[in-house]
Image 1 (cartoon, rainbow, N blue to C red):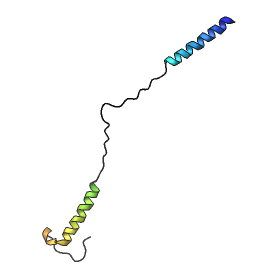
Image 2 (image 1 turned 90 degrees about the vertical axis):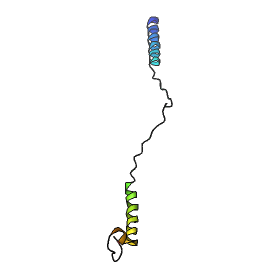
Image 3 (image 1 turned 60 degrees about the vertical axis):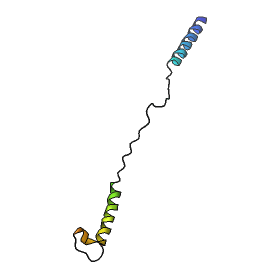
Image 4 (image 1 turned 90 degrees about the horizontal axis):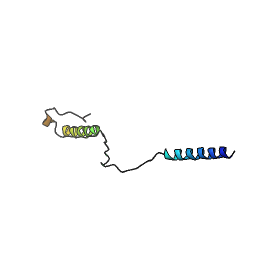
Length: 76
């Protein structure tokens, strides 16, 4: 019976040692290059609205400048 206990103890010890040897290692390091974030922002619509408003104002102020006949009332 003593040999059985000894074998079990040795088996358990070797199992623990083998499990500890296979433990994964995690290393956290800062990157060598700076982090690059690409933001694709579309601002086309805002620019068009501003230009359309400016053109409407210019047409109302001086329609002859653009070769158009003066219109009665407000421009659409």
